[in-house]
Amino acid sequence: MAAPSLRRIAYHTLQQGKTLAGLAHKELSIKLMEVFAPDAAKENLPIDKDLIKEVRKSMENLERIDWQEAEAGIYPKSQLFEAPWLEWAKKYPLVWLDMPQTWERRKKNKTREIPRNVNEEDYPNYYLQNFHHQTDGYLSKQSAEIYDLQVEILFNGTADSMRRRVLAPLKRGLKTYLNKNSKKVKVLDIATGTGRTLQQIQSALPEVELYGIDLSGSYLKQASKYLSSRSGDLVQLTKGNAENMPYSSSSFHALTCVFLFHELPRNARQNVLNECFRLLEPGGTLILADSIQIEDSPKFIPIMENFHKIFHEPYYRDYIIDDINLRLEDSGFSSITSESHFMTKVWKAQKPV
Ligand SMILES: C[S@@+](CC[C@H](N)C(=O)[O-])C[C@H]1O[C@@H](n2cnc3c(N)ncnc32)[C@H](O)[C@@H]1O
Image (tube, rainbow, N blue to C red; front, top):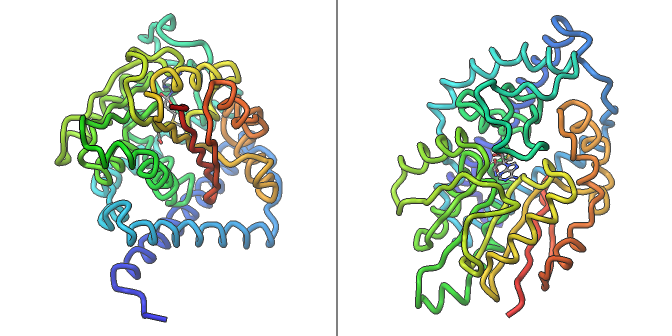
């Protein structure tokens, strides 16, 4: 067997470092919460040794596939090292400063503390909440500034690797269009947030025309800041509800949607899928990525339960038992496949020709 290259070792070291940093952050924050806000510390399900082994194995597999797909040219290897490190270093103290407020919210079970200047009529009721006990929900600059870092910490440095799992199926789905090269290929990232998936698609598929939509103006501004600092064509960002998107029917060749569905009630999940079907041109592909579900990852049930207990995630319990394949079929999709990578499940579905 050939010795791993220096770059492979560097990538492994980076991932290990991110994992250790994530674990250390959580350990310390739990200790502080026990001291300063003991009531907020809810009873978690125990994670036994066997489960910890499974988690490690699953993270190793994710790292392996992340490297292999870069080696196969699905995305440039440089993407594995990409992150706004300086910006994250600057924002890290804000994550700590925000913590007492999240403890307070958790303790008092306050889940709807949304900034006063928000016009509630502009948003669906299910959206006006402090998902993950996040200060301001998704509706402020401060929330948008620390979101990426919080997610990286939550997933012990694997969030971007999990998001990247949409790239291989996306490229497969777009193959015929990219080969024809007759007109610009259009891809929309739904609930793009701060645009991390858009950045990944942009570096893997620099030739496609990219669009992003999200309900949060603040998150879109953050996405715009990141995207405009990169080389590549302009990405068109729109504020809007994924249940009713302001684009014409059959106007996209592919759609991606990452980490949205666990934050939607059932009817909204179906509405979004129906919209996805409408927006795709016949033969177009939808790539959906979200949390793993109980059916295919029963060993990880305590982790899923703890996620629901620790964070305010009002629709997560329902999401993990929801039959997304059936929903995709109900919307009209066919050729549905799915695969799981660590804590993320990725569906690929096609609009029939
Ligand atoms: C957990 S974040 C995921 C963001 C991003 N895709 C990522 O990978 O980090 C959920 C995102 O969905 C957006 N969102 C929630 N409900 C939405 C809806 N009905 N329409 C559009 N965006 C929505 C939120 O504003 C937030 O940016």
